[in-house]
Length: 411
Image: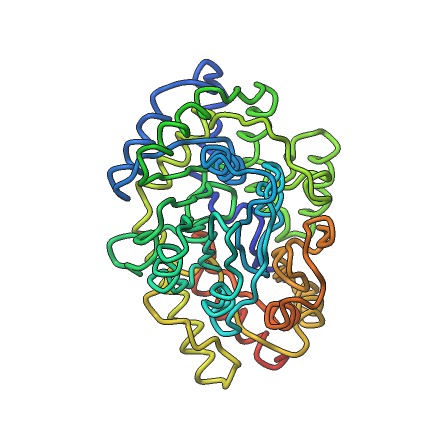
């Protein structure tokens, strides 16, 4: 008997309700590019996080808009961590600025405060603080460092969107907050991103960047809106062994929009910005209105994996606590890649793009992202040993139980 797939990436936010909403949007093309949903989402984010919100068609474009608004000059530096996504250095390099990588704390997967302190130079303009998988970074210490060195602090919240249940540190200390509304993020609009600004002078320039941004093409928006129905169907077909064939056919028909284009994996990002489509804003807004139950579901799975890991003697990260709405649950093992291959034969797909690479995904070229091999040993060790377990909204507790039962003998 085949089981439904356990996964990270097969439309993790998509329910039957999402499919119906996206199909309804497909049938109203006059709402695709402009409409009330964009402003409703903007106000909801601004009111929740007490900052001005600016919306773009992806998180990486939102970051690029911010770096442009900061008026970064060629040769100025932005500090980021090793073990990050290639879109961050791409955005920095698109402005002509320099990426400075620092090592991580092995048990938080976030940038080491000591490493950041040693990386500051007179040319440092910003620190991008990543809350990896929803594990809070030490924003208080980084805030103090940035104030001392007259640099701005950007909180990268692509993996997490906090609610009133915490963790309270996330999004609390940054001059700017970056959110992504991608397919597997804290909330999803299929695509989209936001920069929230707490500096009025930069907010003015961010508005100018958003006003200059162009619309995505109608064809691209249509392909994005087809994503929920396509992957919802694929998930069902994986249970009978036909999911891979279906997705291949969808790819040949041009229905699938890649998360990363080939040129992005090779270190290039276009300097042109595009707006968040109103249709995607509508989906993101609906997801945002359900943020608390989404995060509560993630917290429940975090607690389950923690309890199982402690009982079974797994190698757990000491920084994970039960109140965290993790985007995925990380643990360490010596044979992570072999275990993923073994699990795939049982319809368990734990490849998520964040393994075996310091600049993710593995298909990205770290040299073209200006990463110096062996410069961040903790990050390089962690990415080889990491195995992540799903916590997304369509991952059920019964699936988590099945996963742990199958996984335990392999660890």
